[in-house]
Length: 118
Image (cartoon, helix red, strand yellow):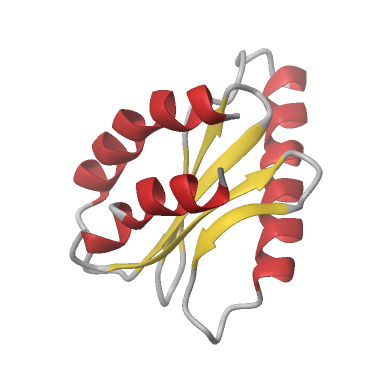
């Protein structure tokens, strides 16, 4: 299953500006990843699932419904997060030159494939 998931998420890494992609469980464990060697997969999994969880709580408190998609823009790049079947989070790391809309569209396309495997 992991190899199949990595094959699916690696398609995201073919997008110009994308540096890595991963699927992490809601409790922070990496299910599959195609990340650069200088990124700790355990740290990425733990911190990004915690961030997504915190946003989920915040959205509820602010009466904004469920979190659908997250884009966090930083000085050196962007992080994209989307829920997969409420049991995992698909994430993408990209540099600042990446096409945000195209990445979002491609992530939305593969979520059903990943959901079928979980």
